[in-house]
Image (tube, rainbow, N blue to C red; front, side, top):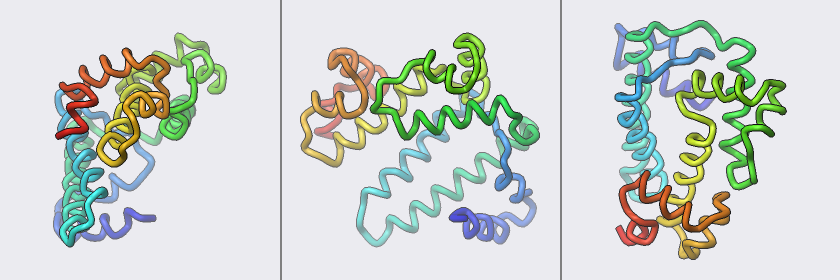
Length: 190
């Protein structure tokens, strides 16, 4: 897979680390206070993907290695759990589905039904598995994609809200401000 070169490089750079643990189907929990660090690394990797200078590939690789080392350290601290169980696999499938189908009208009830769970149980397991509430996770993905479109296109803010699955422009503006600390318009101008 695409992570094999990263695993090889990590083995060379970190001979004392248990690199193989990162490349199995495992769940690594990240505490709420450490989550912003990981999210910032994902943002940096994404931002470098938008650049076309000679340094972007090197920086993306560096940030990826930093992310993998961070995950390894967090996993070792928390004690990495065993392979995902069947319920967690269903939740992971649902999370992957949301990541792809975020523009669609999606509800907790519909996703719970697809996973063959009651909405309350699905909601509880979703939070336990992903660290996010269902709506919080969906909003987060929608906002990340909206931010990307604001940075890379001239599409109107109202259209971006609709493209990213927000049926209410005011809710989009409020959620964006809460997440990014500024309005969509101000974000576009930064």
